[in-house]
Image (tube, rainbow, N blue to C red; front, side, top):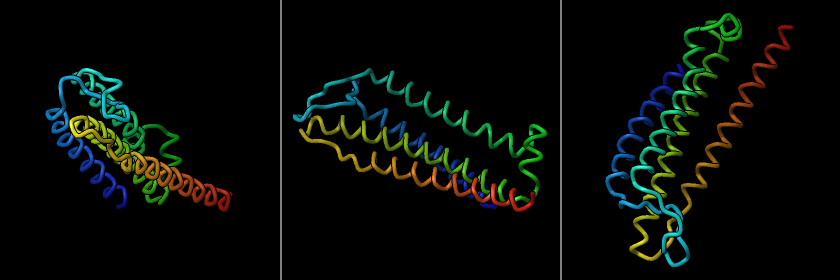
Length: 164
């Protein structure tokens, strides 16, 4: 049941990415700055279309690569998956929930990075610096999800050792 909530979180993050990324793309200038100096002047710029294709490409590649193992687990694609992720095993539910929620966190991270770049380009006119708080949140999200993965795996190892 938990993996269904994680799937919903993933779907919500996909929809949120599409809406926010399209808004940011439409609001950006022709030359997108992704690094500014202390005075707010652009140091590094790329074309708006290249920014779009990099963002969409990263989103699609990460989603396809990371959702594929979850789909293989759900469909029991190989005999090893059938043996490791047995029907009714809480480990299967936890791993599916972790995978879908981790991909959703990656999607939110891409959104945060795009919002940061949008902030940089909006601040150039205001002569200031964007707040990097969102970038720190990305690191915190990754640490939390990696710790959760190790907790899930340690529980499975203890269960395997107790049955052996």
